[in-house]
Length: 452
Ligand SMILES: Nc1nc2c(ncn2[C@@H]2O[C@H](COP(=O)(O)OP(=O)(O)O)[C@@H](O)[C@H]2O)c(=O)[nH]1
Ligand SMILES: [Mg+2]
Image (tube, rainbow, N blue to C red):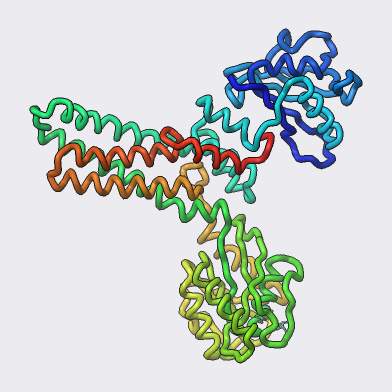
C-alpha cells in the first residue's frame, strides 16, 4: 500500500457538501487525529462503508465543522488501499483548514490523478477504465457521459482483452517451434494461426472504425457555416445559440474572422464556426477571413451551406458550395424562408437541404434533427473508442498484424511472424495498460484534477 495522501475531492466553491478524501496505509489513524466520532470510537472500530457522524477538528483541536466520515478498507475501495472520506459543509475555507489538519496529522498532498493512478497500479482498473474516469467527469452531453460510464465499468476492456488473449494463445505455437526447431509446424496449425490473426485484425478494425464517432461524442462535431456574404450565416449561428453571439448587419463582409460557439443540437455537442462570407475581395483582412473560412470547411465534420433563399444563387454561392462539399457531411440551408423564396432544394447539390428562417426560427428544429441523424451517437454502450492515445495504439497494432499476416502467407520463418505479432501484442497492451511505459502512465494521470 502507498503512503497516506489527502486532497479536497470536490469543487472549491461554496456548496452544500465538500469532500476530503484520503488513501493509503495508515489513513484511518490519520483521520482519527482530526475526526472525533460522536460515539467516541476510533475509525478502526467503526463499520466499513457506513456513515459516521462526528466533528472535524483543526490542528489545535478546535471544532471546524460537523461532518460525516466513511471508511473503505482495502482491497474493496476505489484505490484498492484503505481509503476514507470526510463529508463536510462545502465551504472552501473549512475544506482548506480540514486539509491542513490532515497534513499536520501526517497525510501528504495527493498529486493530480493520484487516487486513480493508484487504482490502476493496484489492478482495480485498466487504462481504458482509468481514462474513462476523466472522460466521465468532463462529459458535456448525456450520451458522452453514458459511454464513459460504461467504459469505467470495463466495456472497452472487455472488447480488447479477448483479442490480446487470443493472440497470446496463438503465439504459443510459434514459441514452441522456436524451442524445438526440428519439429515442423503442422500445416493445419499454420492455417489456424492465420485464421486467428485475421479474426484479431478484423476485431481491431471494427474498433478503429468507431473512433470517428467516438471523437465526435467526446469533443463535439466540428461544424462550419459557409456561404456568400449576407446569406444570414451569423444570424443562423445566433438563432441556434439562442443569443446574439455574432454581429449581424446588412453590410456584406461584416464577419471577418471565424467565431466559434459550442451548442447542443439534438443531443449532440456541436462546435459551430461562423465564418466570413466567401467572395472575391480586395480587402486584405476580409481576404484572410475568407481563407480561414475555406480551411474551416475543409477540416469540418459538418458544413452548413447557407444561402439567401430570396435571391438567385450567385457565383459566390457556388464557390461556397464547393467549399462545403469538402466536409465529411454537408447540409444545404436555404435561409430567409420568411421572404418569397426563389431557391429550391433541387438547385443545390446536397443530399439534404432544409429551408429555415434565422429571423423567425422556422425550420431550425428540422435542421437540428438532420444534424442529430448524422452525429447522434446511437449506442453509447462504452464499446466505442473516444481516446486519441488508444486509437493510435490500435492503429499500430493493426499495422503490425498486417505485417505478421503477410509474413505468414508469404511462408516466412516462424520468428519473422513472431516479431510482428509480438509488436501487435505490445500495442494492444498499451491500450489497456498491460504493456504501457511508466512515463506514459504518468502523463495520462497528470491530466486529471487533484482529488481524482
Ligand atoms: N428576412 C430575413 N432576413 C435575414 C434572415 N437572416 C438574416 N437576415 C438578414 O440578412 C442580413 C445579413 O445577415 P448576416 O447574419 O449578417 O449574414 P452573413 O453575412 O451571412 O453573416 C442581415 O440584415 C440580417 O438581418 C432571415 O431569416 N430572414
Ligand atoms: Mg456574418
